[in-house]
Every structure is written in structure tokens, then in C-alpha cells.
Length: 113
Length: 240
Image (cartoon, rainbow over the protein chains, first blue to last red):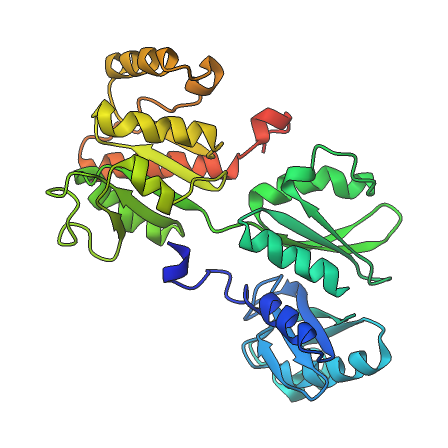
């Protein structure tokens, strides 16, 4: 039964964590993989939850671009406007933060209000 | 996203209800649609409402662009499918590991404790009780498949009725056409709706000429997957 093993949707509990953090009064942003090309490490729909202090749970790239996403998320929490980020090998920034698997991903970052 | 939509989404997930979160990427406005509400007037763009039934079946999240050029992201949440097998029989020994690999949460129910032993069913949720009691611990729902494999009406009939009542996406029963004809008679006598009885897949499994218990397990699992991916397609008239 489902309680005996983790949900296959690897980040299914990220949304639960996001709700818990909001309830606890933390300012929270949610990042979601909305599009992938080539060999992307995490599927479309994967989530990362971030708070204003940079704490995070979940994964949008298996570690490749999380650092950059967290930085953007902190800005989104402050500004309130959602952002659409794109990372890929053609993108110098993405290369620097290390999406070296050859894929490209688009990530939507929004504040939970 | 607002916290209330997030709460509703998590609530749907806890209740094992399928739901799609629609996010307008330009405005950030979100909308949660539960599968149960698809029949209602959702007041959403036609381009979106047309694609939702198919997304509920495929369970694929993804971007949708409307003719006006607006971009929406659909986050599709569908509960992990379950397979409840009635009968700790030879076929079940092959079916349980195969179904687990295919992504199903498998439960096996059989009151005959000689059959329902951990030695025969390692790493499977095994409930050695009568279905009447066992189903209280394993509630059936539209994302559950039920395969009745004991041949024994005393064990199979009640969970078949329960599966039909719970609108399980798959209800199958082992037995020849003759055995099934008798089963149909019993269920009709018991007051089950004829349209519901007709939903039982019997003889069970896709017609692949299966001979051995393992081959029958393959045909049953294939039929379960087929039912899962075409879920609701016939009823709503938009075949996959």
C-alpha cells in the first residue's frame, strides 16, 4: 500500500512541504519544471520549494541548476512577480551553473501568497 | 499560486482524487480542476477544457498554448494506481511482482491462510482475511483495479460487487465463459445493475493465447494498463 513505499512521483511531497512552510509563516516560492529538451535530469512537473532564507526541498535538475534557481526564487519572493527561467548548454549562465548533461529546461518560479 | 489553491491540491492528493492545476504563465493566475468536476461548466478556455480529459488519462504535465498565444502549464496529479488481487493463487505470484514493476501498489486478499503465506508472496501487501473484512482496510476507488482470481464465488463475488460499486477502473474475473455466465446470474440475482455486471472483464485478460499462470498474469496486467490509459474515454466519447 502507498504508505509502505514512497510515491513514484519523486517530488510529490514537495507540495506538502510548501503548504507546511506557508502555514508556519515562512515566505515561500515554488519552482516547477515546465518544459525540457534533450536529456533533462528531472521530468516536467518536478518541483523545488524555496524559502526567503534559501532553504529548499525537492529537485528541478538533480543538482545542476538548483543554486541559480534558489537565487532567482529569493528575488521572486521579494518582488512577488513570477519568472520563467531557461537553462541550457547554449546559455552561458546555465553552463556556468552546470547543466552539463546537454539538455535544456524551462523553470517557472512563483511566490506562494 | 495562492495558499488556498495549494491546500486544495494537497487535499485532492490525500483523498486520491485526480486534479489538474492550471497556471497562466503570463499572469501567474492558477485554477484547480478536479476530475470529478469535468462534467460541470468550468468557465475555462475551450482550448484547455478540451485537453483536460486526455491529460487526466495520460497523467502528463505540460505546456499548452491557446490560439491567442497564452501559455498555460498543466500540473497533472493522478493518484498512484492500485491493484487489488483476490486470491493468493499461482497467477497472483507472477502478477504481483510484474504489476509492482509497472508502477502499481499491489494488495493480495485471500482468507485461505494456506495460500496467503509470506513465503509465497514476499514483498507484497498480503491480507489473509475474507474480502468483507479486508476491504475495510483497503478501500476501493476509481484508481484501483480489482482482479478476482480464486474461481470461488464465496470469495470472489463480494469484492466484485464492491469494485463495481466503487467505480474501479478495472474489474476482472477469472473463469470460463460458462463460469462467468453463472457468475452473472448470481450477481443479477443479488441485485447488481446489469450495466455494471457487463463491465466485468471475463474471461479475464487480453487474448494473447496465454497458457501458463505467468502468461495469464501478463495478459491480465496488459488489460489493466489498457483500462487505466483509456479510463473514462468510452463514457465521455473521446477515445484515446
